[in-house]
Length: 307
Image (tube, rainbow, N blue to C red):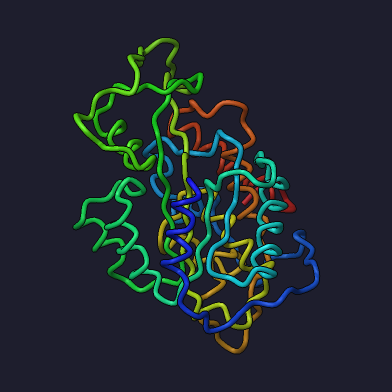
């Protein structure tokens, strides 16, 4: 993301925030699940949380991750940025050096849907949606809207460049004319070495965005906000994903009866989902293999090592 694009995000999200989060003491990530007796199958967690899990190849960041924060005051933004960077490292991700160009950006704004629509009009290259798809994506009010810009590469990470849509999208992202849709290079994917476990291509995340409703952050700590942002940036989260599990940080903004405790950070299951996708050296795995490795990581994260 260029500095001009980051300035654009700042302009879009510059409306006054209703509340600013405050820092809280560090929380032990090994705490027990919040709701006693809560149990579910690992496979159900994966299906309910990650978009396309078990059906489509899952994308992940292969380039070093450079988080960015927009819409908070400088002091809180810097603290949140460091917390996200720490989360990424603890989960097995690779972080770019300070001063890098952001490719994983969390944005706080009082009107997430309106922000997304304006951004889609100004920078359509950041979306794989049609105008009708943008309307559908923003139709239901949500505290977090997240999406990624992905690219199919060969199993070694080389850009394929034989896709008209890919060439036009990348040119739009770089603020260059999307003329002719000519291939960006002449590499062609060949189905060499593909098996039922491995494929000849992989899905790479180029950019990730998490837009958080600033009206919902009152009473939330920076640690909590960093945790939910991290999960949305590293995984392709279903827009209503994870809320059925009250221990998941994805349930942070859900209403709770009888003043039930909020999750203070990433749950064991949250961490396991990320680690299950990011720990394998290669990501040219079949959809079924990715699904299995994430579900296995969740099972191993429980004290009994099973559901």
